[in-house]
Image (cartoon, rainbow over all chains, first blue to last red):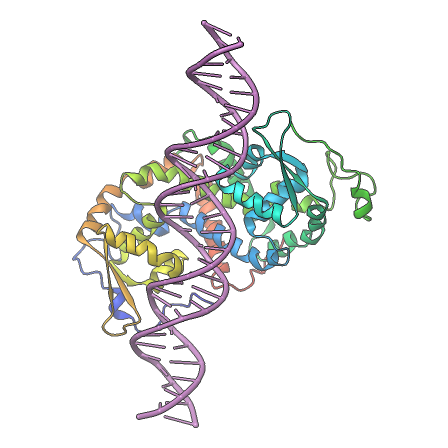
Length: 179
Length: 179
DNA sequence: CATGATTTAATTGTATGCAACGTAATGCGA
DNA sequence: TCGCATTACGTTGCATACAATTAAATCATG
């Protein structure tokens, strides 16, 4: 809907970029590496947001946001774990998780309690109501994959590359790859 | 390790389900599609965030956040355009851009003024100082690609797939792909 | 056993994202 | 030309993200 194509007459704002030679047209310059179209992170960031946007209407039916949804996915599998472990699964820290978990608790999908063994740990556990939500969520993955324009092979390739990146970048150290 | 737990009450609520097999171990269940490890969006979202995290120390030297950086990338190329066009380039709306642009203006990298032709348009233009920043940013792309663990071929493949997704999902319609 | 170092959450402050709404400026048809 | 539909931004409200700091509980050591 939004995002039309090249609206008509906005000549003024397009700017013929002044500057004599500089970068403008079709020739390469030392600034090419700074073009948005040459970046790898940007499309990653943009696609991620676009897909999450597609999730929204589906997740609305479950009264979940995307972050709450991936948190529940972990909970459905693990049934019970602490904030640190959940954060490791989701690549999120307590600063982000604490408010998310409080909301999920308020909705009745999880419970939060301190471990008696080590009171530093806050144990998150999925509730019966939370497990029932899983049933309603069953149709989500299929609906989402239908919204993606990839062939099965492309999906596999993408999946593989992304996980390689996650595995390598894990922790924080240097990647070490090349261009 | 927290884990285990073997919720018994589940058999009652989940009438159908896999009789007794439950899901835990190594066998498949109808819930597999809801596993975080089977998702495509999640690693996309996680990798995107991780890479942006890697950008931070580099961009700090330029006094830019990642969002401000990609906005400047467009500005360096276009020199001048309105908020709508910038938003189309970055997949961001005015709600996000307005505060970002005000910050960039405050730093002196851009100017904001209304178009005299159509006062609804706010024209964003890069300043001299903004163009000087481009020089300092020249080393960022190379440093970032070094932090990625991908081969050149993987990079190209990833780039291609991501852009295919962006192109197809553009606007909003249905992707139409398959699994 | 006393204490400083660690670990785990929660809190605080800053910066996005985005839907929904508000407002001013334009475009357009009767 | 009048008035309504559109368009382009800005604002508001809500939900993340994350660095840095704080607070409480444990651990490690002398």
